Amino acid sequence: MTREKTAIIDWNLIDTVLLDMDGTLLDKHFDDYFWEHYVPEVYAGQNNLSIAAAKKKLLDRYQSLEGTLAWTDLDYWSDNLGLDIPALKIKVNHLIAIHPYVPEFLKFCRTNGKKIYLVTNAHSKTLAIKMEKTALAGYFDRIICSEEIGVAKEDRGFWQILEDLLRFDRRRTMFADDTERVLDSAATFGFGKLIFVAKPSSKVAVQHSDRYDSIEYFKELLT
Image (cartoon, rainbow, N blue to C red):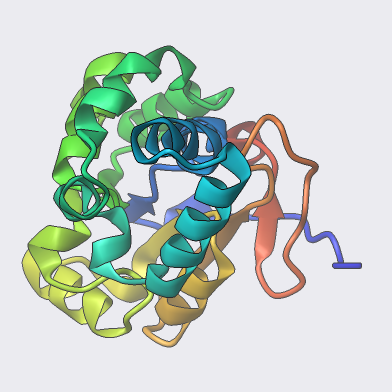
């Protein structure tokens, strides 16, 4: 069992806020449903497979690429699965949802003069679908996809390239993500504050980190 931590931020020490998208700002239920259920169902129908067989085949392929750019590359999956992945995402985009208190937190950061950047491993086509659905894009000073950087956030080199691009002070930067592996990568870079989002999906139980300050909702940072 992991130990719950209370996230405390001295906002006087933070100039820049970096935020992940899926699971952090947006409910990861959409992604979990899409990749673990919807895509296998469609793939099974097109390849004369049972849904169980398709699911096993696809989940094994997903896992082999986690933490790489290919894992989130919609063009890669469209080509390799013979499916129009962006079109399928649009068919179920009613499941795309913003986590509670996210707009309030973004307004809080803006009101308090913080630079706000969305930093995501999501493919640019996924980003476009989700920003159109949520209308969150206007809150950010800039949005950066890992494909622009050339490596995924799990790679420590990502952060040096990002710092060179955005010119932020890492010691006065907060970064929030729902994946410990990504936070581990960021931790080696020396950010001033790291936050773990302990409830990435509305359909799963809260799971706090035993290494990073954890929140369930961003209202916990509105201090």
